[in-house]
Length: 288
Image (cartoon, rainbow, N blue to C red; front, side, top):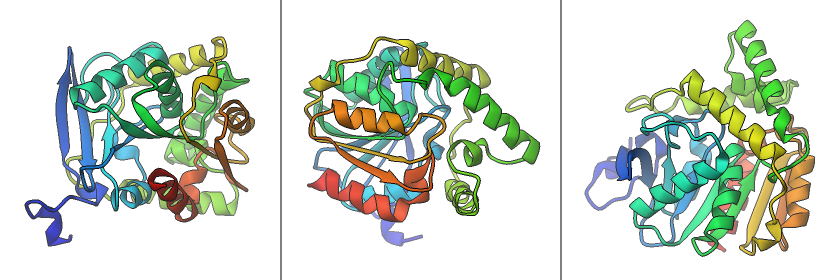
């Protein structure tokens, strides 16, 4: 541990050491963590299905926090945040806006993964003045083809993980070749680097509610993504089973001027498998 991390006036730049805080927005008490230097537009992280504060890859968080103020948070009813998990992603976006408003934030950059990037799309469409730069990874558009099949894929991989006594993310996020298995083990090990003040786990009921919300998102009419005019970076692997990779290309076509990065031989968690390559791209885009 670097003693400077605990010195007054010195910002925490390690996610493993970032304290968990709370803020009240209406009836909900949101749990969140923040790190990195303040004073600039903060980068707010929107997380994936069933994820808590402890599910962010510290190699990506720390890379951004080296130069930027980073905020991560638990969605309503998830982890240490109170309330009931919303039944739709539109409601989740409304809750996210309430959280950001409670922190007094009027301008943010967004880094979002999977379900979080679906919520982020709804947020930026509803509050375009709030978001300056947008990063969408491992995700697809509202009404995207086969998004509603996430339930089948998820339950199948959870079963496979149970039978092999593995973390489901090893199956859901990574391909099952030698490189994917190695990346999966390394990723889950990194998630365990924080040893104190860990978050509460996701409830089964909340997990099922989020799955239902994603299904509704997939079966909804397509959103008008031409309204997104913010600089946008899109990233995925070329073999995403959870949110088919073709949908990243669809997002790229529908968001004018967006940039697309696709990592070969990887799946839903490509940004974690290729974190050494992706983190500098992410930081450069956010600081451009």
